[in-house]
Image (cartoon, rainbow, N blue to C red; front, side, top):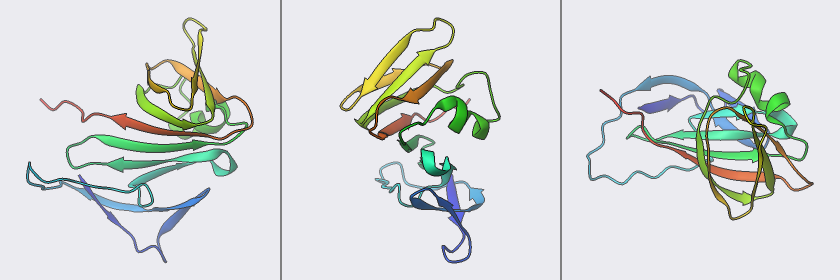
Length: 152
């Protein structure tokens, strides 16, 4: 799907440290199968703004896959800062695959209570049913990937 954006001067959302264009209309992308697509997180399709605690820039690729750049500042918790933006589910309902570029994130599986530390240089896979928080004084910066949903 492609996204049409409003001009930045008149239709932008300001997210903590970047500008996120407003999504006006989505339509089907048509790209040749052999085309190479490049995108930049500076012009995301969507943005989850967590004010002073960070945000997530989201890119939707033509093949349906998704890339995300997440920044979580000192003191960020899934419970306080992200849960309300997702409709307040009991736990994070999403699976995440990604790479940690900085900081330390502690992820807790709510069914077992087990905590796992994810730090700079870690490639990770997190199943649904978790929450998380930033540990320490350094901001957490992640790149996350999601494959295209299977179409029947």
